Amino acid sequence: MKIWIALGAGLAALCVCLGAFGAHALKTRLDADMLAVFETGARYHMYHALGLFAVAMAASRYTHGAITASGWLLVAGIVIFSGSLYALSISGVKILGAITPIGGVCFIAGWICLAYGVLAAGD
Image (cartoon, rainbow, N blue to C red):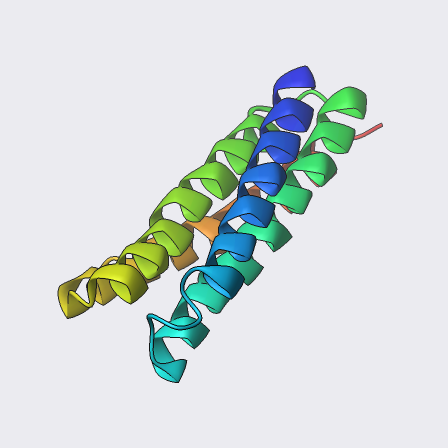
């Protein structure tokens, strides 16, 4: 359980730093479309950092491998989905957008694993 709380808190703190960077340092350097891409990355980054607290809560009550898998899938989603959007917006390298859906699939799989793990673990 500790790892999910620590990762959730650390990734949330990183997101706040990146959000501030985007709002202050990138606002004048990126066009509106690329700034919106960066902000989408930050929004999903925070949603899923907070989702790690749900994983921690589930892990504290239930023991099932799918719960652990859900945490790692959410982390992978943050790295791949949000990371690719951050890199795309800053670099302008459009091919990075092809990686983004892989992160989205990680997010979806993470939430499905969490639901399955809680239901399969029973009381």
